[in-house]
Amino acid sequence: MRACLAEDVVFRSPVAHKPYAGKAITGAILANVIEVFEDFRYVRELEDTTGHALVFEATVDGLELTGCDFLVLDDDGLISDFMVMVRPLRAAQALAEQMGARFDRIVALAESDAT
Picture 1 (tube, rainbow, N blue to C red):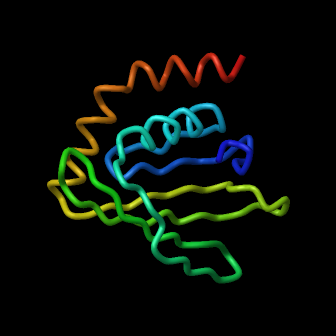
Picture 2 (cartoon, one colour; picture 1 turned 90 degrees about the horizontal axis):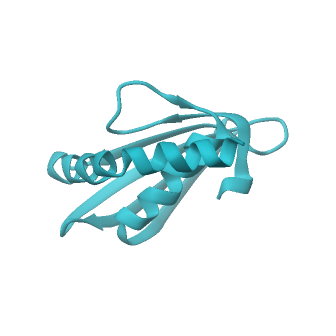
């Protein structure tokens, strides 16, 4: 997945207020979230001239979750904007807790990838 990201990609989390900018932090977030999700699978793809919407399903702490990755591609076909939305609220809260517990690890991974 990291190879599909533009250097200046912006990641918009479903549980954080501010976006994260850059390939290193976005790659680190994605590497960790795939460990948090159980039974992750894409179930539908929608696309138009501006990008793609990939609907997915997963489980977090025993809670079923449905989400969508909204991807905008740059002129080179790399992801320049990556926005995620998830539902229902309880599953989103479980995701936020799991990712929050990994935040220091995510930052360290991003810093090691950036160097």
